[in-house]
Image (tube, rainbow, N blue to C red; front, side, top):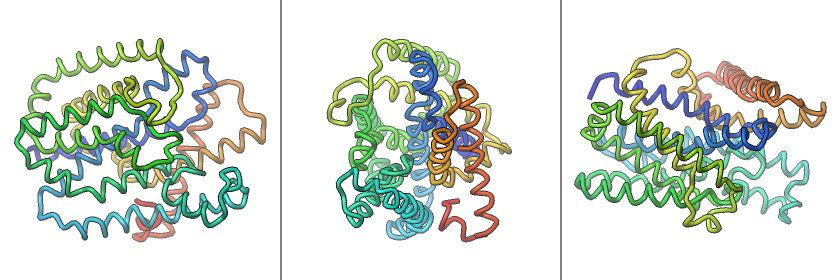
Length: 341
C-alpha cells in the first residue's frame, strides 16, 4: 500500500460533505421539474458516499491494531455523541418553543425523547447520527466479515449492495434502523474495498474501463430515472423497487474512489480542509439552511433559481464554515466535543 494512500480518501471525504450539503439545498426545487430531477439524481442521496468512506476508514484504521470495542465506542461518544447531544438539544428546544411537538401530538418530554432517537425532526440532516451510531454499535460484525475468505465476503457484499439498491430511505428518515438497512450496502462496500487491496489494484489497473462503465451506467440510469422518478414513499412502500438514485451513487462512488486514488492521492488545500471539518458541517449546515429558509420566507424569496442556489450556498455552506471557524477559535482543543471537529 502506498504511504500516502489515505490522502485520496481524505480528499474524497471533503468532496462528499460538499455533495451532502447540496443534497439538502431547497433551491433545486425552484428549477423546472425536469432540471430539478436531473440535478437531484446527481446530488441526491450523496450520504451514500460518506457512508462508504466511513466503512472504509473504520476497517482501515481498526484492522491495523487490536480492536478494543469499548474504547472505540468511548471515542465515538466523545467526538460524535457529545456534539450530537448539543445540537439535537438546541434543535428540539427550538421545536418546543415554536410548538412543533404539538403537530406530532407529543408532550414536551415525549418530543425530546423521540427527537433524540430519530435526530432529524427539526433539523433534517441530524438524522444521520442515530443511524451511523448503529454502525458504531455493530462494529465487531464488520471486522468478523472482513476476515472471511475473499470469495465468501465478495458474495456477501454483492448481495447486501443489491439489497440496498431495492430499498429507499424511511419516510423523513424518522427510523434509524431502516436507514441502517438502506445504507448497509455502502458501508460494507467500504469495508470490502479496505479489506482487499488486490481488488483495489485491479480497479486501478483497469481505470479506463472503470471510468467508461461507471459513466455509461450512470448516464443510462439518469435517463431511466427521468422517465420513472417518483416521490419517496418510505422504506416499506418502496421495498423491492429499483432505486435509480442509489444505483447512480454506486457508480459515482466507484468512479470517484478510483479517480481520487489515481489523480488526487496527495495533500490538497481545500478538499482537505472540508474533510477535516466534515462532521462539523454535518452538524451545523442544517441550522444554516433553516435560517436561509426563514429569511426567504421573510423577504418573499428569490424568483431566479440560480441566484437562490448561490445565496443558499453562501448562507448555508459559508455560514457553516464561519460558525465552525469561530467555534474552534473559542473552544480550542475542546471543539471536537461540541462541533465534532
